[in-house]
Image 1: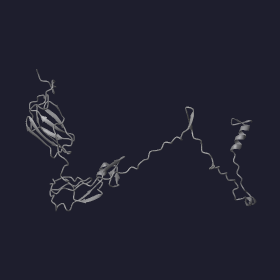
Image 2 (image 1 turned 45 degrees about the vertical axis):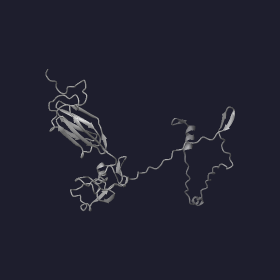
Image 3 (image 1 turned 135 degrees about the horizontal axis):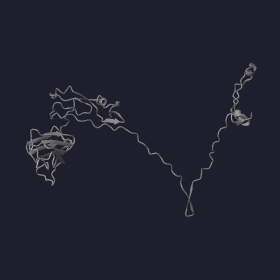
Length: 296
């Protein structure tokens, strides 16, 4: 038989010779005694090192208008230096309450991380036992973890973040601070307003951010007039009288202060359509009927 598994005998013997491993096994005492424990395998020769006198590689030569000029080797791109990221330093510590400024009851401490509220008795002797536990740093939210820049604890849930105890203590809370504002209050002459209506109500919006709810005043002074006094947290104030196009029920009309606007819900007395919100505004040439049309 001249073929083994699809190959010739010569090919088979060649493959078998390449695949065989011969192991010498000593089976006699004399052979064991004559065996040398020293490894006689020759060590590989060390790789040849370049001599110091070897000439450097030739520099590239640029040819310009028949003249040869030696040019410098091209520079390899270098990675820009990266400055290590550092946590910004905490802001300066807030001031304490001005003793001359009255503290209203149920006022929350203004220091970060402290949830204490003021009591009805805010005299000097009553406040001597107060201890404010707060965070002097800023809130830090990074890749799902939450914490403060002033301490090392990090959590994943927002509820747990709100429960992180302050890392600094100070005598007395800060409910009102200095009670003073920097600069003069800016008087706003006008703000953008808009409205829409239903058969029985007019919903008007005066767009002004950060209205101070505690100091704002909205008075439905009469069925055709509204007085607005809207101070803001960023030291602005909008004061005006709004003459209405139609009559409203002052007892049923309401107001609501939101983050970016004041919303008024005005209840009509006669159910008529208003072409404008204010009586001193120019009427549009088109009046849209709201609700079911009346019989002719």
